[in-house]
Amino acid sequence: MRNSTLCYVEKDGCYLMMHRVKKEHDLNRDKWIGIGGGFLEDESPEDCVKREAMEETGLTLEDPKLLSVVTFVIEGGECEHMFLFKAKRFSGNLTDCDEGTLEWVPKEKIYGLDLWEGDKIFLRKIEKDCEFFTLKLVYDRHGNLLEAVENGTEKIK
Image (cartoon, rainbow, N blue to C red; front, side, top):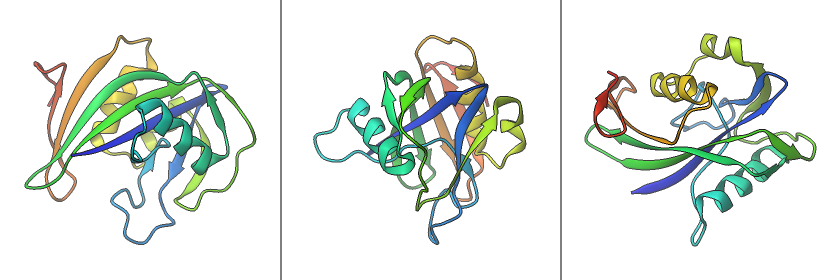
């Protein structure tokens, strides 16, 4: 079981998005995602998201808010728990990232990007002031979303 974080940093009606185009063998290759990554030993979700934000963007997150735990299941393979955050307060200057190209994207244009189908589900939830939720996303080996279940009972797909 792998643990990771993902954060949508918000500014002036935009989210900071990463277009994953720089790594050759990247599960997220050519997709647009928020910022984040895997836990290091002894990190809390908050430690991880702050470290990843600094490493990938040069920004220091102030009070990132945990909104969800998303469980990803890949058919016949790996399982991952992702801690989903949103951050509205940060300091520092945006730097280049070796994993992808960073861009402030207006929220109304997000769904025109090449996103994972499951990401669209949780992005719609976090656009509103939602309460904490869990989400289980099951994908096949080709990246097709097979099932989405919110809070353990409500099937979305």
